[in-house]
Image: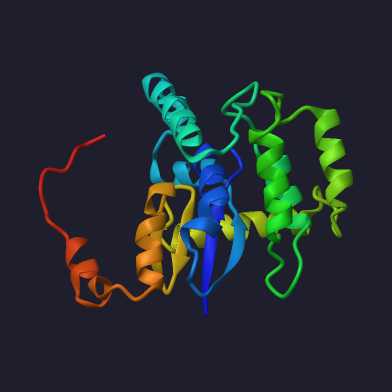
Length: 216
């Protein structure tokens, strides 16, 4: 059985869609999932990039595409009242609600986080009353505002950066990174033993090809 590290931030609609599609996309595969909440904004900052919603024309396309994908896949998806928003309260709540040796949240917790943002009829994800209700529902074993929980989120985000994660959702297995909802078929092929992955093609495709370097 393979262990999949699912890096996500509830701010991402693509992460929400990938979460919903995961069981169906990986049907017949032997795996377990560790859901790892990370701060997407910190990853972007480390890489010197802007998020899709911070570039107006890209924001237009992003939400048109995710709306179409949700329609095509039969997944309910509502855009929150404000986006981007500060996801820290949700990320800390996720880690505070973790369990087991890894301290990661289980699928039930992650589902509630995503539904809080993306299945709420356009409500504000950071509305104080809604956050209080979610916290009461999850009944976290730890205080989400405690320093140990905050540090756990920082550590998880830094580890993701060190492992090469550049966006969410990213699923890591055997040191390989599969980015985005559209990578789920590729991940399924890997888990089912597609010989392409052992042929050297994976490594060859990522070989450096020096070229023009843009100066910032």
